[in-house]
Length: 253
Image 1 (cartoon, rainbow, N blue to C red):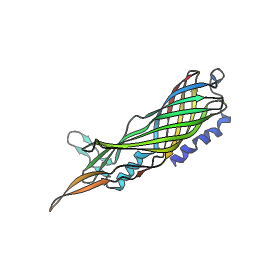
Image 2: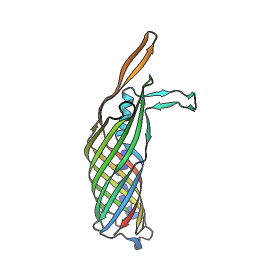
Image 3: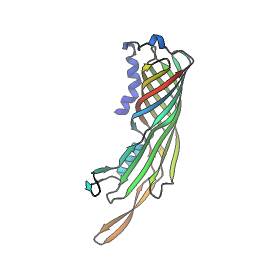
Image 4: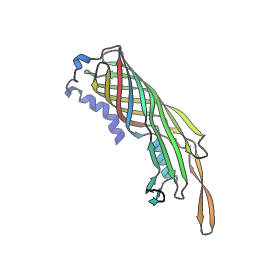
């Protein structure tokens, strides 16, 4: 449902364009053709993507458990696994406004970086670090008052994962997949030399196949101890994702 809302966002904001008042000081800061923008975007929330898929695979293959509340050196818990800890992510976008109503965007960045921790009921841990990167070239069209900008174009999605702790930390897997990106932005501050906007992205492409991760789990019973192999098998990871965030940039002509 969240993906459907984000995909439809450009259509919803475009339908409301005529009812909105002109932006503040628009008559003095009207962007002209031949102008450039250089902007950073910071995702606030990501829906979908390879990190969500890895977590679902962990839940299906025995890496889901709960640690009880404990107070040895400090009190903590209970904790449910798999656990996800996300890092700061961003992208850089360069835009060229060729005409009053259309232009081009080139973007690249890291929309999501996260550490996913799985734990078996027997207490074996698997620490993975997953990173999603992208690059895209898009055609953009501007609304009459320049507040709404929508764009679409081809993209390359790069999925990369590796163990972040343990003997397999040196092993990583990277796969490049073709895709497409749609984006929409609303510039609620649009000055002559800088801008601040709300942005929504949707990217989709072919699935990536990750490597198989394996750990040995030691279990105890009244008759002795046994060792078994616990795996997170390589499967196709969907790279389709959507994210919303804020963009701040500079304008140059």
